[in-house]
Length: 427
Image 1 (cartoon, rainbow, N blue to C red):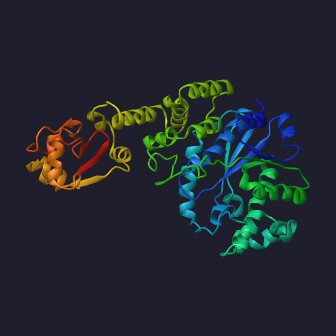
Image 2: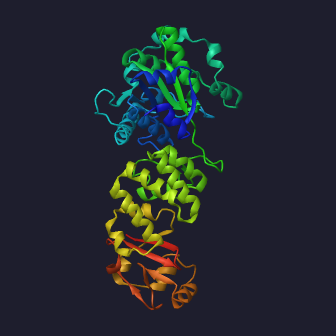
Image 3: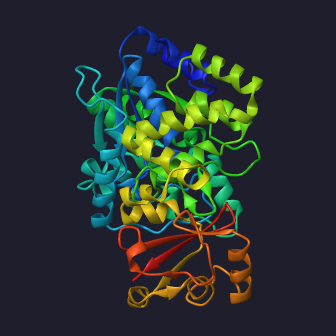
């Protein structure tokens, strides 16, 4: 497998320094990508870089995942309009542990010569004094060179300006490359296209300080066809951690991809070969309403991130809301999964003590909750047969509900019509 060719046909390659492809074709190369440790989980925005590392390792090369314990304390100005909050060491350590656990799902850390390796730049920066840094690193890169970077220019032209801390970021990242080149024989840094300037600073430092040669490769920044930012929803980031983004919501994110974006994403985010992808695209073009591409994309990524069992549960969750799976499915879910399933659905809290006494259905749906805005409207809808609780039609406005009908001793699911769900939580 040719790594660069793999990125090319998948539409992932953006920039590549001359000589890089020739180097990769000679034999095993060590290369790295940096990951930002500002949270204890990566999100789908990180997946393109994870996929780059997967292809790199599958092509026989050795991937280094650098988690920025030191650079996370500074903050990368690239693509940012203002300076980020700096993180404490305790928070950073927690974040690093979470990220390592996630990367281990994708990369093989025990496969011989090209085993993946995790490094933390805090390890080589923690005892590096300021005076040592400006003597050993600062003298090799001119201010003119640093000022010419787009990330610096844009900030200086903006209203907030740029702190000295952020200005030095490219030197800090550049030293990472130099350190890995010198100590781990890392000849290549990879990253998103917005990292080109920082990566090239590293190659310059290797040349000027180490009299060596290093290379750079960047991938396309992922964008949605409608111009909105990839990986964001109204609820925020789509995380790889199931406690932050439920597998159901994760699956739905990919399933709801537009046809145009699905054709791009299936190349970038799956390991399907070219023939498989072209066959899926042909199926999609023949019957777009079946959403074959989206389903294949969502299944592949959900299984690789969360596992087969979580994928099956995500499918059942979809069928529960949109199909014919019975209410008993809810009892298979824990509280986080139930709340994740009904995220964005109106939910109400009612008194468990009241339910133990028994509550009239009209009172329950129009007084204890506001499933209906009035008792009159509740009665009318019930009489028309358009109301259900726990997927069973409410037969009469005189029906009484008590704690015995609670799912897992806690939940009631009300429906107004077929598609309007409401979660009632008894406490």
